Amino acid sequence: MENSSMVKINQQLESDAKKALWVFVALNISVLILFALQSHGLAFAILSIQIALFFLWLLPVALYQIVRKNNSIKLATYKALASYRNIMEQASW
Image (cartoon, rainbow, N blue to C red; front, side, top):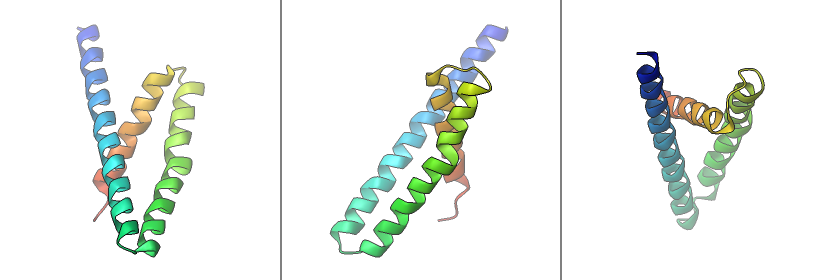
């Protein structure tokens, strides 16, 4: 019973991580489009927000999962990306 629940949790984590990557890709494509349309200020603002999220959120979450929780790098990355997806889900566009 526990093994099947762990597999389900890992599948959900992997799914959330993949969705987060797609959100990240979509944001970067939109930044490229804005940059191509000569909207440099908005493009740089979005890029700076993404860089700040990476250094202030994703990296600390992944390092915490690796150092404190003794998770594998793969699992720590999935958890960090899943948390990024949750952040993007909460954002009001």
